[in-house]
Amino acid sequence: MGDDASDKPHGFARGLTNYGDRDFSIYLRRSFASSMGYSREMLAKKIVGIAYTGSGFNNCHRHFPELLEAIKRGVLAAGALPVEFPTVSLGEVFLNPTSLKFRNLMAMDTEEMIRAQPMDAVVLMGGCDKTVPAQLMGAASADLPAIQLVAGPMMTSRHGMERLGACTDCRRYWGKFRAGEVDADEISKVEMRLATTAGTCAVMGTASTMACIAEALGMSLPGTAAIPAVHADRLRAAEATGAAAARLLENPVRPSQVITQASVGNALRVLLALGGSTNAIIHLTAIARRVGVEVALDWLNELSGTTQVLVNLKPVGTGYMEDFFYAGGLGAVLRELRPLLNLDALTVTGETLGDRLDAPAEPVDRTIIASAAEPVEPVGGLVALFGSLAPRGAILKRSAATKELFEREGRAVIFASLEDLAARIDDPDLDVEPDDFLVLQNAGPTSPSGMPEAGYLPIPKKLSARGVKDMVRISDARMSGTAFGTIVLHVTPEAAAAGPLALVRDGDRIRLSVSDRRLDLLVDEAELARRREELVTAARDPAALRGYDRLYATEVLQADQGCDFGFMGPVKP
Ligand code: FES
Image: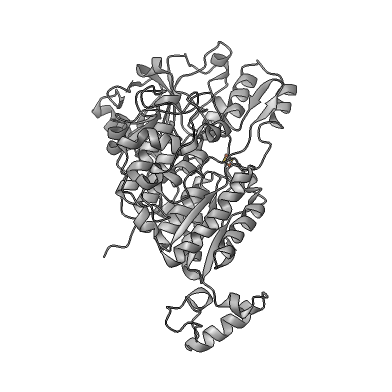
């Protein structure tokens, strides 16, 4: 009953609801689809699905209705039928306990709705931190031809003569407020000026890092990662993405052909050259795992030693994402990295990465994007640490840290949970000195807090009042991509999984050596064995939970495996 009997079923004739009578299924589907006003000609077309994530709880996607129209324009002009469908949307600051907990839910939703509904290709509209990885994870598993369009970054704003951009400046001002340098009146004004347009955070935080990773993987059109959300080019990119999705109908390129060992290596190089978000290593690990590619932290260290930091953007440098766009965007970074990249990696348009980089380039603003000959930093922005405190690894964003703190031994000041941290960090009687290491336990993936971005422990008020700006801070939590400081994150195994982090006590000595890639707890094994026997972990008992909470508590993997669910990897043949 298809219009073109020689074709495999496509469009509305794909993936039929099963009533035991195929012709009846097509007849019924068409009659219901026609209730939406489609003509016979439209009903017969191939369909580009559009995974739509506009939401009243997602400020970063505020402009998605307009972007959606532009995508549809591109699809229609190229001869296919665009059909949007809603999925879970994750607005970073609107989710409790933390957006990461729901990334896997969004990935499952995206995967299943791509697979269950009748579409021939799909456009993924993502942007805010977890939405881009969730969509790439879901699309990689569904493996229908897919292309991603990101939201694009917010524009900066002004406070007096100063430029402000969420959310590095949020944290900077909050630090000033805590230190008494800014009063309640001023912080209230700043609050209304930090985030003023549609789009994702204005710095090289998690959202922008993931946008660049999507482009580096080859899953989005070249030159689209950094276009500001409100720029007319963003709408043109949406239209072009719709058209590219329609072309995928005739020349299918599947996510499993694009996300490969080669392109993941390229994405890791990009992450390191951007001095990008620590969250991105978790997300890239999870995306790669969906197609059977392992991102070992040793691989990160190997590439980090031979990849320079090339961008001068907050939180590591001084610029904002709009500066990055005008400076040349990701294409300019990729061209500097060219000798280090796998140029044969296939992209979603059917070109290789090398083809893309052969296209004529615009001039580059070297105050924002450095050349490989004169990099911002000689080595990559992230490094993995291993040792008795982190047998399976921990992450330090060295490009956003204080180098004087890199080779240190310090006394541990322990906070057993986020609640304990909130209750005591500003206690005037807290026994803490600037050379101490602040240690937060039980903030990892299986803890009750679900691995929040709490690794950026505040400097105790009594020390910040003395002018202390940075200290070594260690946890199994994550850190916002917009944050900075000498902050060791993702300690694995986490405390709630009875990792060595759970055994640290106040006053223990810890040694950090970034040059040796080491993080060690200097307590003898006999004492650790004694503590292990007494240990009661903070992990939740899955039997006492229900629904998604239970699935999450039972299945979430550790940070070194991307915090995906164990059963979401590829099916073994
Ligand atoms: Fe959405 Fe920062 S809150 S990207």
